[in-house]
Amino acid sequence: MPRLDCFLLPHAQCATCPVRKSGVCCALANEHVSELSDIMVHRQYAAGREIVHQEDTSELFAIVLSGTVKLTRVLPDGRQQIVGLLSVSASLGDLYADKSHDTAECVTDVTLCCFPRKRFDAVLKRHPELQHRLLLRAMEDLDDARQWIVALGQKSAEEKVASFLLWLWDKQAYRIVPDPELGDELLIKCPFARREIAEFLGLTLETVSRQFTRLRNAEVIGVLNHRRIEIKDLDALRRLAEQGN
Image 1: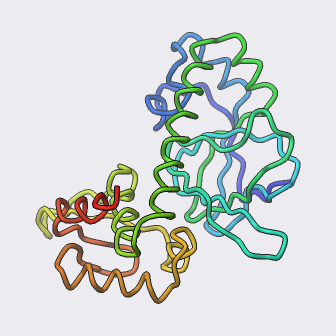
Image 2: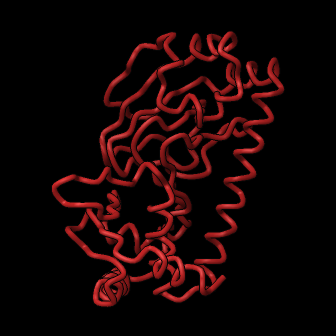
């Protein structure tokens, strides 16, 4: 069973939901949203908590409302690899598998909009438009996974780190609203520790730190602290990330 920090009761105000226009539920017309709100519950997890463990039986299908979740797969000999990163509006859980393929762990505090898997599937069957939206999202996720396969398999350490920072920038959830007192710097918040970045990119911690230093010395980025990064030259970062494509 997932370890939960807090349960929040379902509500009918889906129109004010932060992912109403970007989650899979955006395919449903307002008059049908109650079919989901009636079976939904919000769950909150603290950073570092496990949502579901690899190979555990799971009835969970959820949409990330806030925060970041990492998916980790463990090999029989104990080695592990981060195989996915989920941010706001991403879907968590497999509708058609009884067991979880990966361990889902909160990188930050996380709020999920959760549905019983079989009851969500029943709503899907009544609404082809929701099925279509879920299929589109699955295809987008597959394309993202293929992009990361290329990055992890073919790119240099510098290209990998640049690609990771560019991914953070392209995900709106990680951008920091400019502070008028600081000017118009392009700031991102990185919820991942250097160790987690290294695990995801298949690099050593030392290599990741070295690449951050190189990017900083080249004035492509500025590291304000371990969690706040300034993008000084976005075009240069894109060139570094894409030169291996």
